[in-house]
Amino acid sequence: MRRYGKHTDEDDIRTRPNRKGNRPRTNIRPKHEDAAEGMVLTVDRGRLTCLVDGRTVMAMKARELGRKAAVVGDRVALVGDLSGAKDTLARIVRIEERASLLRRTADDDDPYERVVVANADQLAIVTALADPEPRPRLIDRCLVAAYDGGLEPLLVMTKSDLAPPDKLLELYGDLDIPYVVTSREELESGDAADRVREHLDGKITAFVGHSGVGKTTLVNALVPEDRRRTTGHVNAVTGRGRHTTTSALALPLGQAAGWVVDTPGVRSFGLAHIDPSRVIHAFPDLESGTEGCPRACSHDEQDCALDAWVTEGHADPARLYSLRRLLATRERKDGD
Image 1 (cartoon, helix red, strand yellow):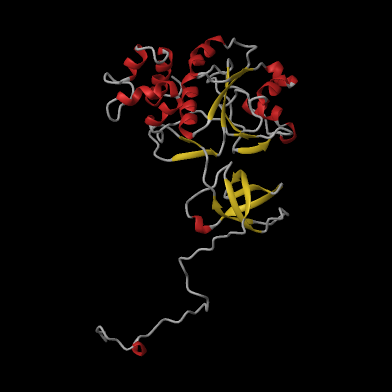
Image 2 (cartoon, helix red, strand yellow; image 1 turned 180 degrees about the vertical axis):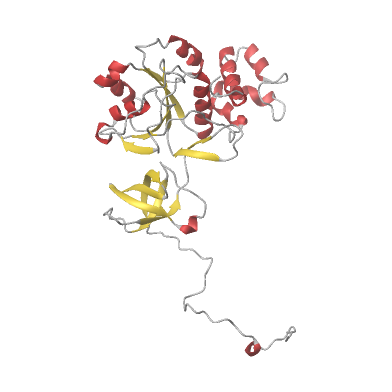
């Protein structure tokens, strides 16, 4: 075997020919400065439906993006065939920086987070007042995810003809969350959609709720030209509905300058990805009182400075109770 020293003769070195005759790979990637801007409307088995200049374009993610996935609501840059014609396929080459991100995990022990929607301004938490019974712990978890992801919450209560909203309103009154109460009759007449629409104008709103609460029925009333399959019946034994929405979908809110994102019904909302220290940002009246807290304070321990802050009259004690209830929600099951 020939061994080479420091001074080799380049003519003696054999190189393997490039049989394909193409150029060698390079780490330099094109910047795609002429790429068109678009918004992801829905994702289905690796194919992404995007809105580009008023046209619906089917696209796929470019290999250069690696494992970074685009989700509903993402602002993306696309190249390729952008005509939107049948059997054409564009390519997503860049995912723009996200302004907000709603995430969840399957449960609190699941290390893998699932992105529900990007760039939403608001999270509409839909819950029935009866049939099925409201699940406050699930609502709490949705609130924590909204505060953590940079979304403003909106509480939508349905089926008020079956039960009054007073008890639920009392539970969340101290959080100052805007809310709408609707009945089944109002859903059918369109009055409920009109009142909910007042909170949606000019915003991207993601709708979330467990099955059977009337979420998709409400979305159909808000966007009648793009009706989705309505929710199924509620099981009389378990008190839970059947999933009928299987993928998230962004829909334009008619004449109003806004978007509605209908998401699949959830039966659990894991918070394994949530950093509890960020939840305090949703309580500006309490946040100033944390300056005297010990390092890594959970805000629910003996040395927490918030107790003295509230005692001195800087904030309402009910607000501190609400904060601690939300922070403790990771330690409880959704159905508790």
